[in-house]
Image 1 (cartoon, helix red, strand yellow):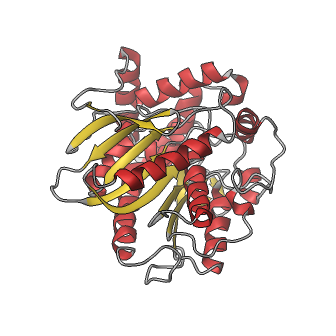
Image 2 (cartoon, one colour; image 1 turned 180 degrees about the vertical axis):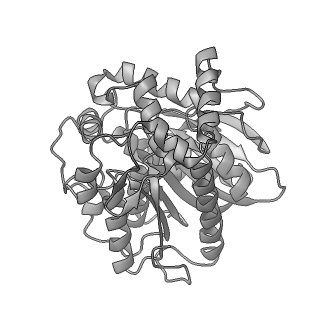
Image 3 (tube, helix red, strand yellow; image 1 turned 135 degrees about the vertical axis):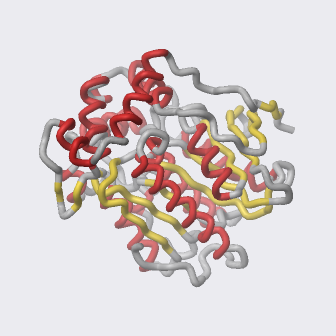
Length: 376
């Protein structure tokens, strides 16, 4: 039986004095009038492919370049991880209170660290297994702590955040193996966690990739399947260079060079393989997959592959809710603590998540339901 150790009210991340200053400065700057934010960014309003970059995002890019600068691809994995930890500590904000938090060691042939967030309300609630982003190289439980707390509180559901193994020390398919093992464990232990048997999967960026892969593998394995999949600006196909990769591959927070670097660390090559376990959009069959909520950002190099995946699911008869936030950047859900635009977007996503889970309550994965099947 996995050991559970309460971790509330422990603060996972303690920001430094500089990080606290940057957090307060960012919040102050983002509260200024939009025209002032654009002027402070040092360039005129940005409009690309019919999308206008939100003034807060435009200023954020300028601040990020000023305070941090450079590309992840120019760093070693250890240096990149430290930079990522510093950035997540800067924007962490105060921990959002939830019913309870416990650190868990999942025994699946090897130990997988995880963190369970329980809602305050009594009685069984749905459970989502969540996989953090970070290009399969960066990220940990602490970096996505407040995002998981927000989902737990506002969606009124259990969240199990998974600390899967990272590349390059543990290259593909280690992350996939851990993601699948954690989902199977969650299904077997949902009642022990106080959750219903209905287990969803979700993740952002690389974590969205893992959620999609887990859904596909569960469909073919014949065992428990997710009741829903929630893919936030997911990385789903590097075999095709779609227009958004060209349009936003430089100067919009995550670069094409960064994406290539992540792929090199994860797979050992910058040449993408048509393996659905790496690139889920390369799957030959999509029918029977769980209903999906897919979220994209207008100024994200990964935008088009997320929307292409929504089209593939929809054509296979899978219920899909697709939402693009035109003026936002990749990773915006983690910026909700400093940006009112990102905070509002996250609130809308959680509302759609609640509806998705409610709509799938009596629907088996792969069957048709009244879930909305067009972009919103």
